[in-house]
Amino acid sequence: MASFRWIDEVSSVRYSEAMTKRVYIETWGCQMNVHQSERIAGLLAQAGYAPTTTIDTADVVIFNTCAVRQKAEEKVYGRIGEVMQVKKRHPVLFGFGGCIAQVRGAELMRRFPAIDFLFGTSNLADLPGIIARVASDEERITHLPPAAGTEELPVRRMSTVTAMVTITEGCSNFCSYCIVPYSRGPLRSRPPQHVLAEVRDAVAAGYPEILLLGQNVDSYGRDRPEYGDFADLLEQVARIGPRRIRFTSSHPRDMTSRVLETVARYDNICNHVHLAVQSGSNRILHAMNRGYTAADFRAIVDRARTLVPEINVTTDIIVGYPGETDADFQDTLRLIERARFGTIFVAKYSPRPGTRSARLPDDVPAAVKEARLRAVLELARTIALNLNRGFIGRTVAVLVEGRNRSGSYYGRTDDHRTVTMPDAEIAIGKIVSVRISAASSAGLTGTVDVPAEVRR
Ligand code: SF4
Image (cartoon, rainbow, N blue to C red; front, side, top):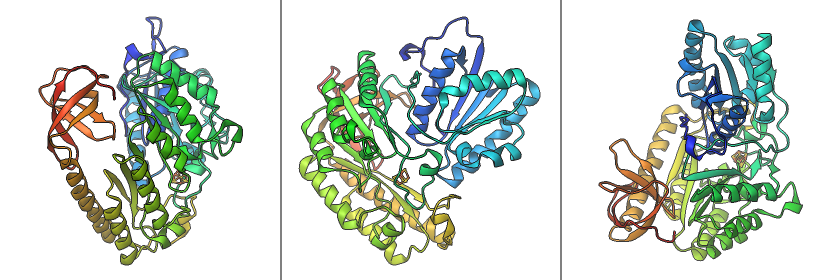
């Protein structure tokens, strides 16, 4: 679950004393969902709702959910109990939205009487009207139009450092295990002029970092060839001149050399690519409908490192896909060793109802999945530690993102490594020069050398 923090000063949406209604938004899942909550917040601000951080103080509670993993879905259902308790104490409208709502709508309304309205992943602009109707009619509403088109909505940003900008909605790849094409619909590219206008606004508002978002950014423009492709869009964003540009997620089947060449050409595009490989076994990759082999993937990583020698490649791995043998898993470990990923997000396979792989027997025993997960994590930690140790003694540019619980500032390098800076007095949102003195598998620690801004 991503907690939702409100930062009034940086939003283009202003709050006023006249706002007497309060909305609490709880977000689950990926950055796409976090950004969708920023748009819901912007939209509801225009409808007169100010933010609140507890369910107890809210007039409207919204859960923006994720259906990608079974465990996360179960946790969301567990949270409904708290809303029910609050509803016993005072009236509150409860809206349940996002991916889980889109794919399990009718079942949710039957199972959870506490839900007052259901909304999906598209047509968010209808939300203020739905809330008004539910408030006046006291009738439950299910609003789940098929995901289509793209929406231009006001945004209430959570961060003062990173401005998330959507470039595509949905996905048409149909990886066998993935619910996204069903919950978010087919690929829809956002018109480039809208993307570029939002980037210009964010830069003008002082955001040092732009994060371009899509389920598969490399597929940008495939549905609308007149928009150009992702390399074209990335170049236009770079020319606007944000200090840093990131993008996620990339797909090995769709990533082109032109994208990597654009990363190499522009200093303000970060030296980092998140390229989900999922498995190192050709047999499993084929079963997953990923559209590439382990050799194809290695070739992309090699090309990336030829063009951008310092690039940090991070990835996602699924262990225990149906039919995954020990030999398949050894292929995955071999690929990890070869690719030397900076970070690996690893998950145990869980079937998602409605997907193609859910029809297969989930036949890898839980204990084997757990052992494979631990093996990947251990290898990932060893590789990350070795890579990070290579930074000791070097000076790197760090964009300061915030303070951790112990009060130390932290930020990220251009290549997406986390750097902690104890004892520093620096401003969030600035880029500082840091001399690295220590490394762990999780990141770097250093001293601010030049408390002035450096170029990247
Ligand atoms: S590329 Fe595959 S895994 Fe990623 S969102 Fe699309 S279907 Fe899901």
